[in-house]
Length: 272
Image (tube, rainbow, N blue to C red; front, side):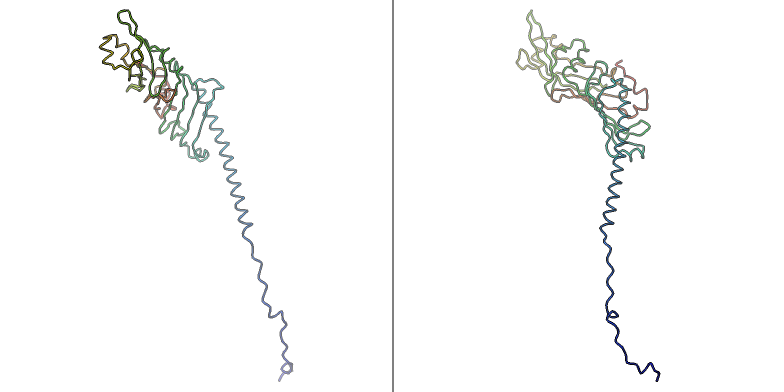
């Protein structure tokens, strides 16, 4: 027996039986906050960059509109770009751009203009483009004053019609005639005002009754009034419709998507 075998067995100290203290768990929320802060900063940087890019593109478009239409330098031109600008700049194509300005003049035509173009490539072409021109009573009078025989000074707007008044003379007596005219666009792109209803001395009367009373003299009242506007607008723009909304005449126009890239389409058309 070895000397060590004769020694009594000693109990282990208490610390030998104690369970190890658990490691402190790392909290996840500081990391989550850090990620959120980084994402927020990235979004702010993106939005700030997009805001700057939007301002530059809108200013460029405005300057081009003022120059090409020979507008006053201080003309207010509102430009709107649909969606984020930077991705569209990278793609080389804008989804939708809207340009609007008030009191834009084209020859004797003046009105509030809104142009919308979709799918605009950097080459200057667009998938689709359209415009509306809104004329108040005074602006429409100025346009109709170019039509021989039309009593432009009596013109009024009474939705859904344009109104005018004149006189028919018979046996030395004058009879006041009021006419309500419906605006439309002809196949050739002219503005046309067509008689819709008549009043003789304030009382409603039909076209047939007016013919029976005044014969051939009634032709001066019952005729359509056409206005060729092609000579005042670019060849790449065509009138497609017209209507009266409230106290304004609203004209719809179709725009050839190649107009920005084709100089010939930007030249005024002809009424010949």
